[in-house]
Image (cartoon, rainbow, N blue to C red; front, side, top):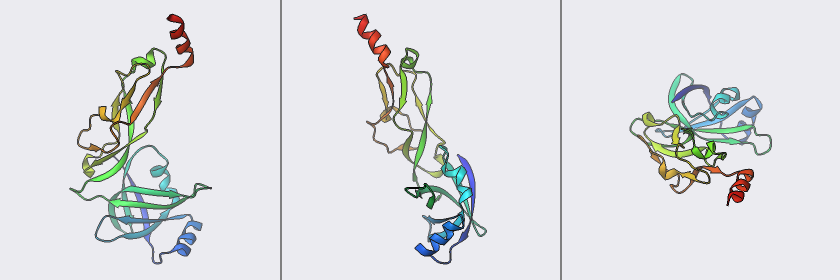
Length: 190
């Protein structure tokens, strides 16, 4: 799993007024929980670009005034209108303690349905998994090599190695749709 460092500074005052002042200075208020106590800190907004605006999953080394914590992003809040980053929650990774996380899906193989003229439509881009920090995958591999026209692959068909998939097993991950032109040809063949 990819690693990234976020350097932050402890927050002396907590509250709306102070958080607003931090955001005006291009800092993002953050909290790190999961340990013995919560750590409230702020970090420059520019540091979150590689972390949040990418489909990849990262383990974050949070450096708060010299103390380094290994964590994952649990939640990020954005402004509803201007999409400004408002707040980030980090969860401390502890050895032997499982964490839940959204992991991106990666398709492997070639679908015969796509080769026949169908279109692969991705229904789920991420799957929720539960695993120990050392077993967290970079992505969940989904084999589409036996996906025919008009068929879909469900979450229950994915083989989990070292982690548990929490997403509903009946949910489709991808479907091969039949385009209109191909439907017309199929109807004309009858």
